[in-house]
Length: 89
Length: 251
Image (cartoon, each protein chain N blue to C red):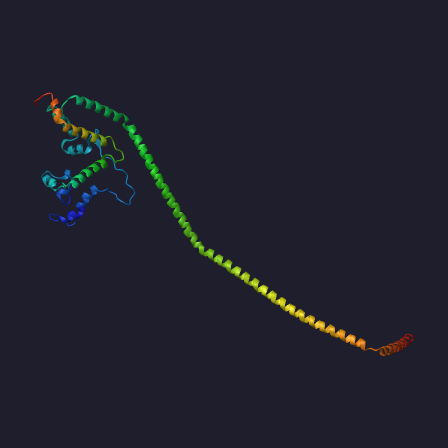
């Protein structure tokens, strides 16, 4: 789909080609306000897509829980490392 | 705002209408219906999620390259790698996780549909209640419009009403005028009649008085002697008359 040329910074992450990622990251708004607003926007996008819908399933909630489980495992990996059954893998 | 940014960065743009690109961007970040005036659009269909945790977009992402089983193979390979490298450690917490996961999945499978239908019914009731309020308000306004139209129609008849009232008033005035005219007439006639009667009376009294006076004078002027003479003359006349008649009777 040939769009008219849009500046790299404005594209969404999924549309940024691999070579343009540097430019993209360099152009994003890293002020506290900008970071906060991007978090806020992501949050609202998630809500609007999975929760404020006509027939929402368990996915909206369970994806958040799965993300929480994953994140907590990653953060506590250094501690869990000691429960390994073999030393060398 | 986006269209202005695009218009500023005109270098490299080959087209003269940058609005298309801005539109493509904008159409994804705005609602598709007008934001303020239209009736509230219904809730969208949700984003699909497979197996409760993986969004459908992931499967669509991998479909062109690896077909339908691609993500599952990816999942299998990934989990095998995690287990073999013991990046995912199997310990007591694994057992706990499996237990909790099983309970969660069973609960969702068992109570999910009934819970969903209850929630839907509640939502339905709320929506129906609000719609009812809206419908009542609209019916009220429609009635008010009808009433207003009827009032406007009534206003048109106002001129007829005023004509009738004006007629009434003029008739009252006329009646009053005629009544007063009549009254004035009557009073004038009464006074004139009085004057007339007064004059008649005066003439009559003068006449009577004069007659009485003449009579009294005449009677008073007849002396006794004149009376004797006139009586004797009457008797002699009567004798003559009697003789004449006797003569006529026998003749």
